[in-house]
Image (cartoon, rainbow, N blue to C red):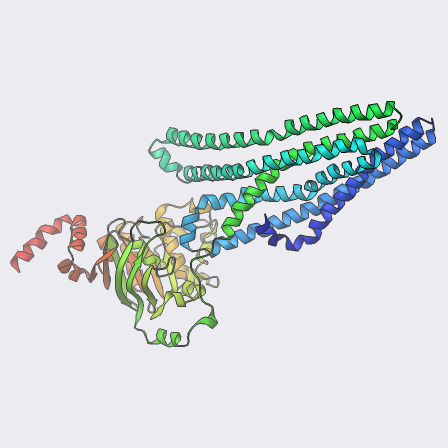
Length: 590
């Protein structure tokens, strides 16, 4: 919890006032037994009704003031806890946005969702209850012991022995249960992951009739979470009976000792009643404390998990404008190459072997680059290094003659437009989604991009056209429609470098061909990277890169690769088997 205290700085006043008003409430609670004792010893014993009514009026007044203090403490505690949770949630979300793909891959989506939602809610509840009750219970317990010493020293010794034992029991249970609550939250991560997978992949599950297996897998994970919760719940539940046994033993000892002294005339009856009332107050506080301990244990465990996310440092650092060397600007102007890879090797975190090894090539401005290779050959990984989603392990990636590491994040974002394999659209209108490319784009520019992406018929067919509302993830569109609108969003940006990472896989051949033609006719010196499984999709590119198991096996035009690259020929003839015989015949003739 200490690591997150920085987000409570703006609520110092509330964090002090909440327990302060609780302390005032405690003071009035501790005075009540004294007033009751006086009422018995003076008013009742002396049959003085006026004194009894006077004491009763004082009790009512203290109850009213105590209630006001309690309400005020609740207000300040709620303000501090809710404000703290809001700032913490924002800080975690902002921090996640600053992480590179490497850290995001390592952390995992599901655990981040749990930490942003359930974990922070648990911390909020723990802080709220802690500010109100965590100090109240010790105040009452210790205050009751001190008040007992003002009444009778011998009886007060029972309090002095009982209270340290009670605190020791409480501390031991906390020590055992906090690590277990961390395991519970980790199990919740796994349940969240399964829930997310089942909800997003429900169509695939039903297509393969895997409902029963999915239910069984979820049940197994859910049962594990339930079992962990049950186990830690049993340990936490020990707090009540243990403290009850101890406090009742103390109560018996107190009544026995005070009764003897009353009979011997060493203590008044009212004092004995006051001492027992203090013992009752301790019992009541321990009941509250037992439920509070469970909540606090959860919140401490969750605070550790959230703090762990905040301590993850991004592996990538983007330079500021002032850190850029003067020669970099001239290098950009002089370089004839838009993109260069110089002996680039890349390995994913935790992977046993590199996904790319010793990749070198250069692409001039305005050229179209086709990238082809088998599944897992490193095509998507290669284009992910251009916008610096990942950093190369060795070698260098240059844009306009300058290392990608020398660009600010904003510069890279403006220069590069990318459409990844999985088309992602967000809830909102088509216009809102397209303006992710350029917030200031006019409707005319949006329609130009839509037309180039072969999506005009899609938008024209929707009610409201650009104002048509898309559901979350674009669920009210087909796969091909989502891909075309994703391409349009990238084209709105008018990037210097356009990367289409197998983003036309759901398009028919005619639409794919029309799209490639439209992209080739883009104005300006747009350098285009086309990642595709289809030879037809990259056949007319200026340069084709052939990848196999992370290595660059060939570079050149289609005709050049047909002559020089065996890997390329294998891919080509696997897609056009009818042309294999003619090709072999032409070789024999030559």
